[in-house]
Image (cartoon, rainbow, N blue to C red; front, side, top):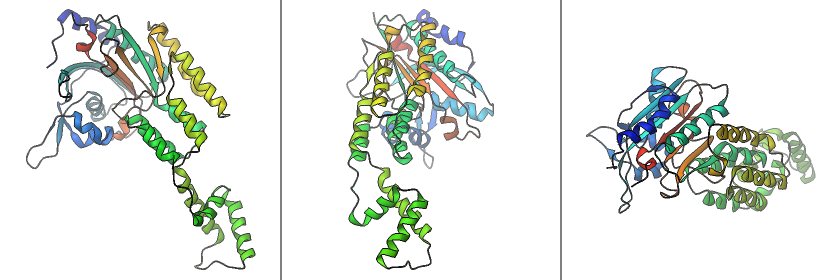
Length: 374
């Protein structure tokens, strides 16, 4: 178990959440295992305490509050919700690490269509920072990332949608992107019989149909089976699209690899991203403008710019984040024991069964880590 936090220090960490406002909520300690693995991936199983009664579905002790609180909100039927929580979460600890498997979490979750999502992002990140600082540490820093910005960078490179989806999925779930990049980079070269689909796939379907008809004339053949040239061209173009959907050119792979290596103070990081986009001959200023506003808002909320770092390769193990994400880290504790974490997960409610797509953003703080050991 985690060492208890002194009541006065715990009250200080709780105070920013009280000021933030919301309904204090709780969630069942036992949660459906299959649901969490569907969202976070099978690799998460090793970090969970699982239980199963005879003839019953597998359950797990809640590893955090985000999914349980999201379920509470969906079951309420409300269009919007602002929730606070404080309670125990449970995760297995590496053998010999000395880390507690049962620990206290405190957090906030906000659901609903916001007029100003960027302002909401700032509010949540600033809340996590303020509550973490209330623990008394003087060695804190804020690491920032953005799943949506990575997707936007891939879109600017005009990658096929199937490949973008695969790379963003690996990024968001914390899986090895290098493996995915290697797989995409070394996609199979087209065999001799695939060269015609490759040629036609590079043309609009109308032009592809004309080329196919011309080839038939030159070869003195006619199609059999009752399919028109347009239908055959469409099928061949689809084959070519599938063949190319999993491949990156060497130049694309190099740009993406260099993008993922950027970690620097935010303004420097964004300059480097723009330089990569310029090298790729694409405009990327519009996609970075939300971060200009976020930085300005975080500074106004009391987060010093010197304490912030933007990491393009930063991701979290829970695979439901789809926008801005962050961690408050302590130099003493290291990168793998964040004091606080959170971000945006707009797609999560729909994946949990919500009828309407709503915005979702939240944060959690570990009071036991926020307090420096004497």
